[in-house]
Image (cartoon, rainbow, N blue to C red; front, top):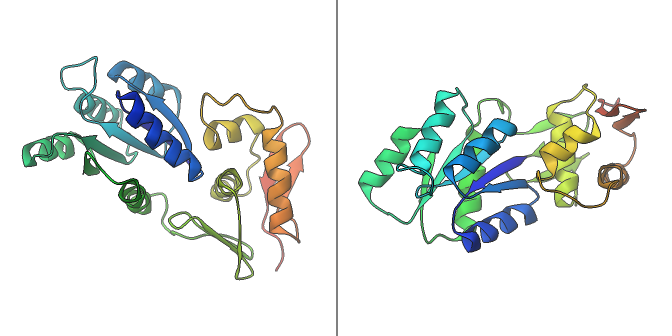
Length: 224
C-alpha cells in the first residue's frame, strides 16, 4: 500500500515516514499545500496523513482535504493537528477527513488508527484476501499458507498484497515500484526481481507467482 504524509515540520515528517516505511508501506511526503496537491495529481494513494496547518494557503490542510474530495476521491484521510479543540475537529471532519489525531501523538496509536481506516475502505469488501491456500490480512499484516503463518518482510508483504488485489492481471515492474516503493526510491535496479524471488521461496510450492517474459508478473490461483 502507498501512503502520502503531508507535514511541514521536517522532524515530524521524518518520524512518521520512517515509522510507516518500517511497517512495510510505501510512503511519499509533501510539506505544503501545492506539493501535496501535486503529489495527489501525480500518484494514487491508499491513505493520506494530513497536517491541518500547512504553508501555502490560508486554510492549509483543510484546503487540501476539500480539493481531494472535490475530485471525487474517497481515499482515507487522517488529519493531524496541534490545535486540539472541538471546533478544529469539526472543521476537519466537515472538510472531508475520516479521522482526527491531535499532536503530540503516540506512533502506536497512529498505526492503529491507520489500520482502522483501511478496514473501512469500500473496495475491501472482504478484509481477508485469498488466493488458493494463501490468505492475507491487510489489517494485521499477516499471511498464511495452509494455516501456517509466513514471516514476510515489509516489501515482500506489499508485493504479495498488490498481486493478490490484482489477481489474474499481469503487473509490470514499474507498477510494482510505484505502488510498493515510494516515489523517490533510488535503490538497486533489480529490487523487484530480488523481492519476487524471496517471496516465491517463502510461499513455497505450488508456485503462485508466474513471470511473463518482457511484461511482468501474474498471480494465479493454484490447485489445492
